[in-house]
Length: 102
Image (cartoon, rainbow, N blue to C red):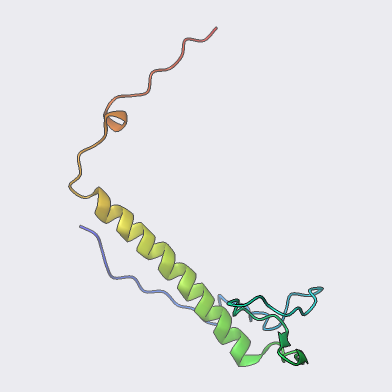
């Protein structure tokens, strides 16, 4: 069957602090309506640069890595569950015919 127990560790040994502000070289711009990503701007102008590094930056990177790992695991489990008990397709049963070489 499909194993549902997985243990992973996300800490300073395998995660680097995330950048909290805009990428280096990107200019602050007012976001379009409905865009809630960090833009460096608010309604009345440019925001001050956030303090980079520290515990919050490390926590953010650990959360992002955990989310990425969780998404990959769940996708794999879903694909495995779809394949349990299904009949193989004709392409999976019959080998592909190779074209004769010239």
